Image (cartoon, each protein chain N blue to C red):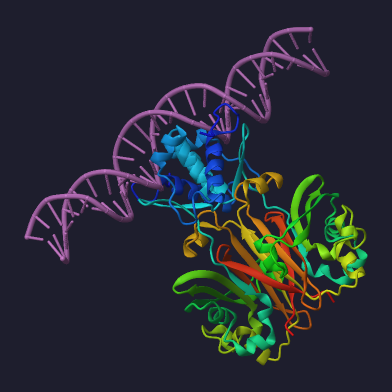
Length: 254
Length: 254
DNA sequence: CACGTCCACTCGTCTTTACAAGTTGAGACC
DNA sequence: GGTCTCAACTTGTAAAGACGAGTGGACGTG
């Protein structure tokens, strides 16, 4: 084999590199099953924990995934969905019922959403982002978006309650055009949105609700909506599975 | 202890959850050292491999990191740098020497860059993105950006060679305003840039050159620059450490 | 007091062994 | 032919032991 036990490089890393190489070279095709751990101990002449360490590395990289009782498989490339953020335009909003439902129509899946509404005092971060005093009451819309029953996106939206009182924003169903539509009806005029994009590994809760495979990070998008006076109306934190979504932005050069 | 060996939940996950809880509760402060594996085997009354499985989980989540011979430590929150993409505007370009150098001035670190230039036939993906025939010669600018000596960003930029021939874009130093400045001098007028943002776990090479800790994903940004006729001039793939960068976008609603 | 050695402590790697739990197909049975 | 059981696979979890290697402080020596 290609393994040199006296090279200083840990054996399990050498094995991982070898398997990774066989995957990229096509010897192990996407979706194909790897040899069993038993077989691998034989071919590399090491113990099973060492094999498991090697496979564990590849799993953490998202290169393979394993199924209890079945085997280890090469992660096939995911068909990712592009979220074009320019669709947040006023025109698009008037056509669609909401951002997610618009995506569903484009992506060809059956959407469903669970919404939980609550009211709470603004924490430090929320206050900072909304430019209000900590403790000010905010309306929180906590949403789980599902595509064909599978949770694919989490979103928590916070608005100072003064902007939502007496509007359908405090209801489960905000009506056509979503919360933004209601804010516009109330006379608000939107300044350009600001979006901040981060990536990190999911928390265990996120991993289970989004049913993430090991080695799959999440995209964390924070959107801040302001009116033309610079007053923040909403801060929306979205969590997306990175193997299912990519974000498209347009940057004007003028 | 809080560990129930007959609960069905694997012991190492219970331990990981307990430690994670103690971290979020503040019992183990950011940067603080965890008890040694030896101590943990005693407090939880399990074997060392089980403890290592638990700590390995937390490491994969990026919650803790370990140093050989020293101990395991709670990952302190990183001070992340905001990359405001609107800075790609023409005006900003005329002021700054280049995007990265502008960031350096804002971030207060000493920047350095290594550039490798090569020419190669366009592969499938590049041709698709640039809207050219596969095999067409492209100029490749392969850059490693460093902040205070530490590699923080990788960028590979590809341009159809017809746009770069005879210009400083084929040199290491492109001059003031960067490659975009040269293209404008050649009479190109830019349409809005398109950027596609993805996140994934790093390849081993990326992890080592960017010196990424375990459990840190990378942001993969693909920028496509087109002229006002819709002809693609450049496709730029950037790899950023997700614990050091966040991306800021502005979305116009008009 | 300064320096260097050494030792104790840390995590990293690897082996051997055992059992549990999920999956699948062969083969017996109805 | 259809169904059920079971055995033989798979990976998951856990233990105990051993040695290696990096770190840093105690301690002795000069």
